[in-house]
Length: 283
Image (cartoon, rainbow, N blue to C red; front, side):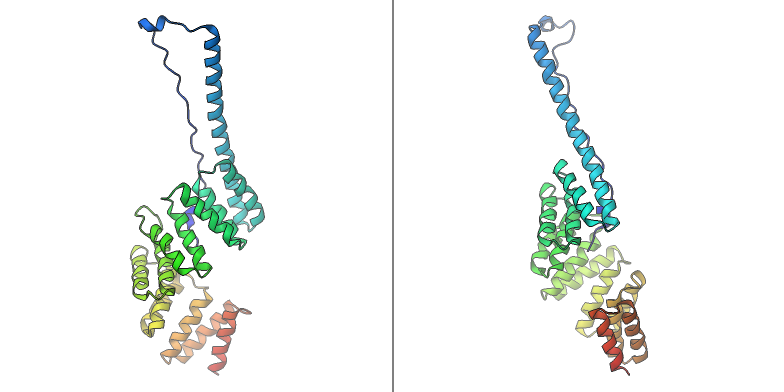
């Protein structure tokens, strides 16, 4: 699942500004000493080199910031190859910026380059272990590959960060990973924790509904599906699963309407075919 704050424009970090060495103040006895002129020239050249290094670092970070912004724009326009070019450049110019590695990981993910995406997310949290967006995105990527056990530790790290601005995302992802390895009670707790923090987060409601449906509690599942659809009304899977609970509750007309909506939202897909099969069953 994707984190929204990872799309914010990064600001260039201020470069190190070397201070002048103190040679003594006028009036101080030892300030009367003057080194030979060749030493003064060498010292001046060294200072110029230091200032030059600082200026180069600052320029590199500004260039990285520009490439990051271009990469973000290209990614938003679905021009992923161009985005990868700019973000790779940005990561080379400023390799210690976790936001660059994080966005690079998202770009690789969009290209289905899972190993490169994983490496980028891991680099993001390597350079900043407190960068919870990177931990969450790493966990989400592992879930997308069906690696649920492996997804749990990074998601636990993100969810435990009290400064993480969108903990409901990490908690929901963590709940889904736990659910898929059979730790159902823990999964339900994570979903409810997510909803306590952000009661309108539809994905947490949807996954909680799936858990309740699997348990056979179709009334409560239906309530959660309905509330999830407020936030994502065009989600075909939610409509399909909602229809299943309605059918289990013998509400055939309402179930038919839900299956029809799912089929309209996802025609030609496996999910749409499932909805169509239920419609034929109800004829």
